[in-house]
Length: 244
Image (cartoon, rainbow, N blue to C red; front, side, top):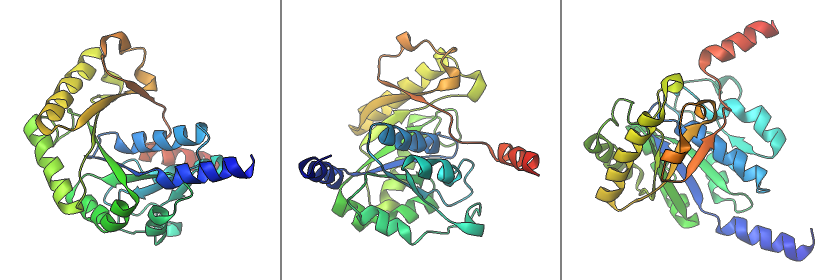
């Protein structure tokens, strides 16, 4: 790569906004954030994945740290004996990750009041760099089953974070019980949210394991296929057991 190419790449990274992925517990927003980070590096754009999901996370982006850093994805998350703590432990590297301009940044943010307040701590830095914020919706999870529930959650997150949503992402599923009808149900509610708020709805998530159960030809919106990067808590315990 010559100096001109390097300068152009640096300029593009500097202009890249912070990408914030938010959603309720069980929405799939962390899996989406992790997949976006993997896609970025696969596209030749090393990035930073920042774990801001600090209160009782089920899946954590910090769990992929070792594998991702080998691939060129820097994971900013609680470290050492705090790496699996269900505590609001923020790495001092978070602010630095947002302010740096060498790599695109993906923020995995909790969709509860505590998570929104944590996001708000970096509101000024995020606005200075520029951002886009996506809401991942799984209408089969508590708190996001209806249009009213989703609008209420969105208002809370925006009020406490000082940031506003720009994209709606549909991810309605029931793990192994997911089918085409269920995905279409989620798309309908996502469209209602988009119509009510004026926010763009442009992505439907489908887990790779469910492709044989979902007829993609029935989906009239862009589909992003999620690869499974994250493990459930008991899967970590099983892996640890076999290492003993």
